[in-house]
Amino acid sequence: MQTRALPDALFDRVRASDAAGIAALFAPQGRVLLPTGQELCGRAEIAAWYGERMAREPLRPTLTSRAGQGRLMAVEIEALQNDGSVRRAADFLHLDEAGRIERLVIYSRP
Image (cartoon, rainbow, N blue to C red; front, side, top):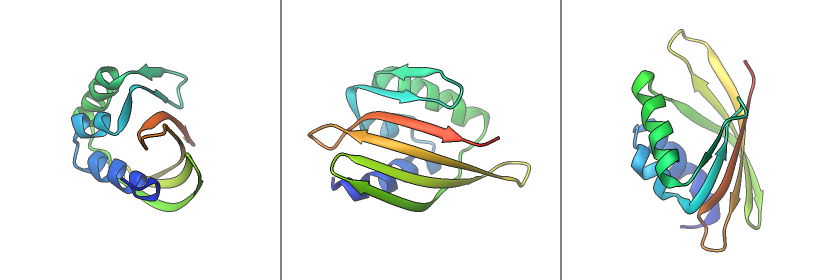
């Protein structure tokens, strides 16, 4: 998969509530750093967290912008919440040599 296509693939899978598909985009020892400070390590933990999170409330992110160079991608996201509000976030994706996500760092505003 091309580097610029990876965010689209990630958020397509998020909108489809496909936790296993999300985890498959990560390197085997990939990590997610959440805005709360929690760190998820490895595909199994990533899939479990996304599965639990999406079971509580479907996630509906829309990519609004992206920038990247080499193995680093930055994306801005807007996500419609169940109460009608919009949550904004910035995600930084660090990729390995094979183009899989090594580390995803998520920043969001309340």
